[in-house]
Image (cartoon, rainbow, N blue to C red; front, side, top):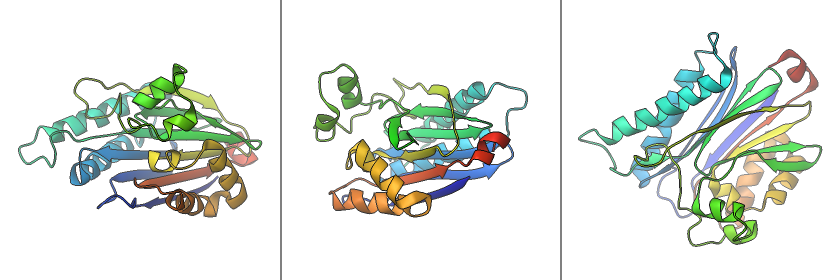
Length: 247
């Protein structure tokens, strides 16, 4: 399996509030992105806590449990960790929170955990598919058919989340498993990328640039398109032996 990652501060940001995780271990390969909210310092803290807690939980492996159950517990623990930090007297922000999207590649499948509007794409045989639903106002409007994906990219409420870690009133985790095939490409990103580039453009650049150069090329394209938010991209390419061996 070939892996790569890159993160860049957005033009409209004083600090990069994104965090990411890319770990290859016996329990599987863990890829995750978190996009912090609540102000520069608070967002940065929330995203870092979420990815670190997720890493701690998933690094323990399955231990006889179902992978989806382990993923759900990891998200719940990450949410609890962010909430506990919010309650501290010296917390950097009372409204701190974060998105969190994780791809845990185990055997011939990927266990996906998701909360917020960071995205996981699957590129297979030249076609791209979004494996996560955007937990945002525009995501809901798009699924209801009230706006198009193109309209969602410029909608005034495109950054309003309906689900995030650290949200006292509304948090849940979507958890599901997808089967993988040889030569599949997984692209994990924050909304700094998806807000700036159409999905088809993401696929074109990934296929043209490959895994090694893909993240930097995608981020460069997003910034050139006027991206103001931080942009983080992780890529994984599976070979035939990865699927057969379950790596």
